[in-house]
Image 1 (cartoon, rainbow over the protein chains, first blue to last red):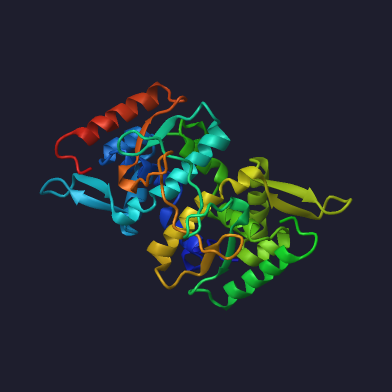
Image 2 (spheres, each protein chain N blue to C red):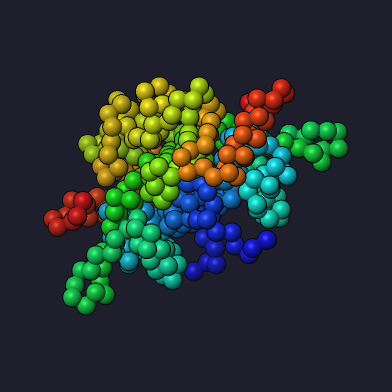
Length: 171
Length: 171
């Protein structure tokens, strides 16, 4: 086995996304960006993260295009980190994870933070829908080969579909 | 600084959720569960993950209640791993991450997998909405203290709100 598998090389958008999103620190940095934190020292203070780890994660998120680094003076030493379109596009996923944490870990009535839209309207729990707007319960979600499916992906999905249709399978 | 920060001890549902969800391997295991994989050897073959890592992640997901381990014979050695309600509840977040990876990493027309509902209806991109159903663009998402906010959370959110209202701030 290789010492570290390259998630970026898997033919899977989940694996590729996780590779670029990085570890929990990176996602907590994105959350801080969303509420207006921009400077290294402010991230450091808000998260209590080691400076070396913070510098690494900011560089990684910038390299992958989720953040842009905007110099604030001529020397280029002071800078603000801001969410790009690619970074903002990850917000629904962050919200979905946070809502799951509210419900299943923090618990109802103990949510540390309330998520709202621009004028204070509370966000509804993220719900899956078909392109026609029909709600899809999580246990009904299926996966079929997409346009980028390779032979391995096709074979695996066909095997899994056969498993799910087999008598005695729980689904 | 402590050697490893306990995300579970932060007063933040995102950090707490990430602590229980685990690393990319754990999330790829959940994806496999969703498409019907149940057995240790089948996870191993599908993901190409080291057996020790797989055993650790399955145990972790079971401990945190996202998977249940169902013995398949009297000896208890053969078992199936199945998503619990708590595990199924994480599916919208997994879908949101996968859709982001489709759009921003794999790229349009190269999606390895198509996500569908029960009868093959394609899933729409996850969209944030208020509880009245009004769409909320990602850059409009705000955070306010929730019922579980402690003094530190309140102070930090107040500081950030002031930052965002300050003249010259980008948001």
